[in-house]
Length: 58
Image 1 (cartoon, rainbow, N blue to C red):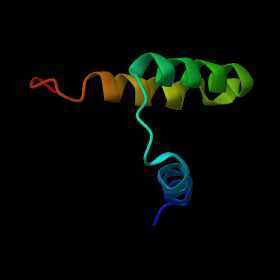
Image 2 (image 1 turned 90 degrees about the vertical axis):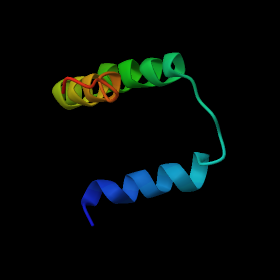
Image 3 (image 1 turned 135 degrees about the vertical axis):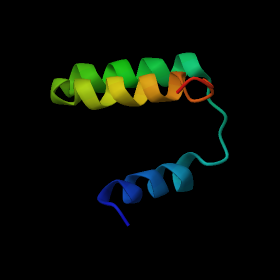
Image 4 (image 1 turned 30 degrees about the vertical axis):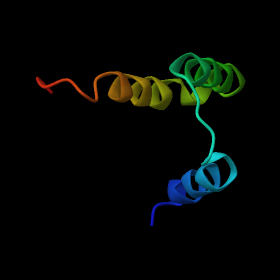
């Protein structure tokens, strides 16, 4: 188990029944980077990965 799995598990436990939109998620990611600029690159990579998840070319 990776260290990040704990945070993911907490997210599922606390908000697993909720539905969120992409706009809401994008706003939370921007807010997180504003508060934690050292995580700009990993958040950008995650956002790009999520955006391209269904691309057949990748």
